[in-house]
Length: 564
Ligand code: F6R
Image 1 (spheres, rainbow, N blue to C red):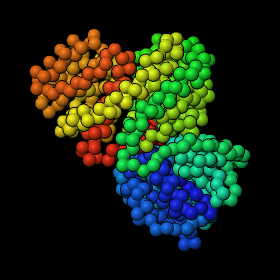
Image 2: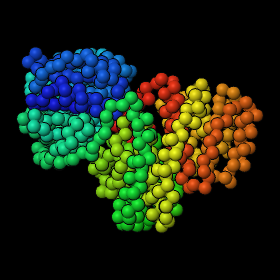
Image 3: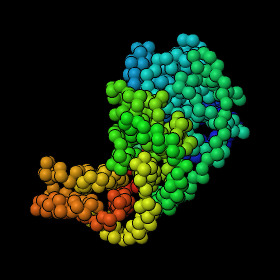
Image 4: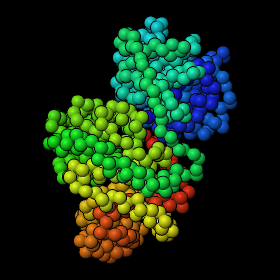
């Protein structure tokens, strides 16, 4: 899973390529590399490190065409031999790949039996060699791309340099690839944000399209030439000014952004009545997302008076149950680029569905007739915080509209979040204690348990402290065995009626020398379950800061998961 970019034309290739890769790092930052063609042939620079290393190590260059890659490792360790771009055995092609190939071992065996030697573990290295292998039999690159496409099982966006041509070749299936038209030439890339231009003319390739881009654009599918029309896109202002830590910035700006979102979605026309009616008319609604977005979906189920099943996109894709035509779907994805969610949409594309993202220029929003933007501005930190609140706010209003209930309590949310923000000293004291532990439980009941899921994910993701969310009532059915003086619990209770039962669990923990942390929230406020998440997001941030880890880029992760 990765970000890719390719340029052909009179660009300042060094500048546009490296800055483009930096902007694509949300898709992975395990390693990075570039390849370009100039009068001396194909040159490659690559490092098993992030794009910052490219800025330090790569000397300025000029080129006819160039390609770049920033990697999130799927096949093989983070190492030089597994870093893109890859060059084919006879040096005819140089390639970058985003996606995963399921049958690459079969192709690899075929190549090995034909005298190819591959040094690394990736599927992508097999692709570049297989392309060359096909080409050496037919001497036609476009034909070879078509044949390659027919051989592959998986997802792939490929951008390719051919040794003898001032052009880029490409092939696309199941993962996004865009063509952008610029004055200097053309850009092939995973997403529109790899360029910092405010206005962009782009064409989105369809699955199984392949072709050649130089001064001209040649796009084919099954030998048939495809005409293309560029769409004009005016991007939202993306405020990614440098700051020491985006997570901190994103937590702090959250209340103000949520306030705007609440103002917008409380106007009845912003969620059209026909959407409310359609959803209400469904037998059942499936809510589909991953990670934090999945957690936001669980809140919707809790609020809405309707049969809802919240399901992880990675599970939904492989469910064998037949689809009921009376069901509706809600897809949630902050980035709008998560492949599991995209594949889930493809599974139900003829049914009624809406999507909720924080990116109106994303693959998911483009695929959706009804798309709702959570309006919290681009999230840079890998851990999703403000987007969670943006998603829950939208889903809360949607659920209340579907229930035909008022939701006036939500207008108070930004003010109450601001109160937490201004009381950060208290959370700092807690962080100082929590940083000493290696394990921790978040315990809650009902909707508070759903908050526990999100708090626990955030803590483990950015601090590497192992944490689990457990239903309070389940403690004595197993997890209590973990409790001792080194294994504390954070209890989330916002419902007064549950305080007594909470006390019992607290005593059970304390009797086993377990430390208990508990913060009281106003139980008369309906959205206190959400305030808890804001509070403990700050805790995760402050613990991570104390531990001195890379807060915005936790190890092994990527902002957007564009592979299965
Ligand atoms: C956690 C986190 C991830 C994402 C998940 C889905 O902090 O960021 O769990 O929520 O990868 O991403 P989107 O919402 O972009 O589909």
